[in-house]
Amino acid sequence: MFGASGFIGSYLLEELLGEKYNIIIVVKRSLADTRRIEKFFDQIKVYDMDQCGLGTPFLENKIDLVINLITNFGRDSASNNPAQIMEINVVLALKIIEEAKKAKVPYYFNIDSSLKPDVNLYAYSKNVFKHIIKNWFAKYIQIFNLQLEYVYGEKDDVSKFIPFSILKLKNNEELNMTRGEQNLDFIYVKDCVSAIAHIVENTESFSNQFEEFQIGTGKTITLRDFIEVIKSKLNSKSVINYGAMEYRKNEQMFSQADISKIKGWQPQYNVHDIDFSKFV
Image (cartoon, rainbow, N blue to C red; front, side, top):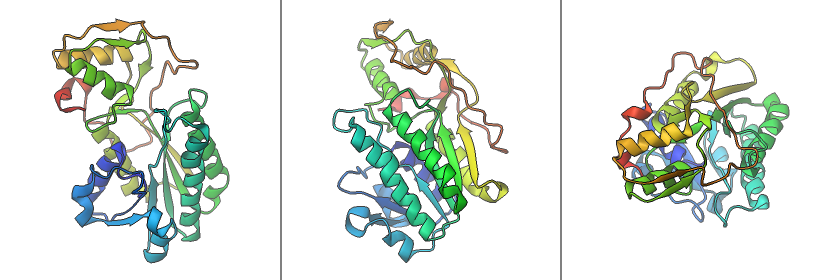
């Protein structure tokens, strides 16, 4: 498992450990913040790619499935660099799947995005990688491409809009945003990882060499309504200035997952049931 120290990765690690899988994680300690997952270190095998390289975990273990969650979103000035985004999301990802191919790993899970490629460089890089693995590596390894909708939950990075907004609302601070007309599929992180784990458990049910899934609730809500629910749940006194910010070029105004392919799984959480006071 690559990217286990991240927001979604840490929840997925806990979910899979609960299913009694033997898990190996590969981190880059020079960059990764492992505080989310240190409590699990006695239950897993950990490799540092800075020390051992990418090939060692495959040489020293019989690996049945690889999940790659390593991602550069390009949200801050330090990482918002085209070369760095492509280096992580395409080049490093290709090196990982190449090692999986050499080791004859039967299954590879790629964590993708529901964003359209022209929204930003992150979305474009994920689309580039998907097309490469679909048209080249799917000949050798069965690929499960998971397109995630808008995932939210505790322990997320405040560089993202939803955690940033929750922090503002908790502190009763003024919040500037767009008109909030985007109609989107927001999925709670525990539902997201339960969907992934369900697909992992049922890999043998799928026969195509390239299988694609949309991970969401299958329902939409406007961003404005979503923020208003959070504000109400927090009893926030914040003033929200809708329309104070312009939409981004190529803003994604609608996104809804088709979850019918994930047989036997349904989301369990609703935004109205979430305790946002525990966020951030």
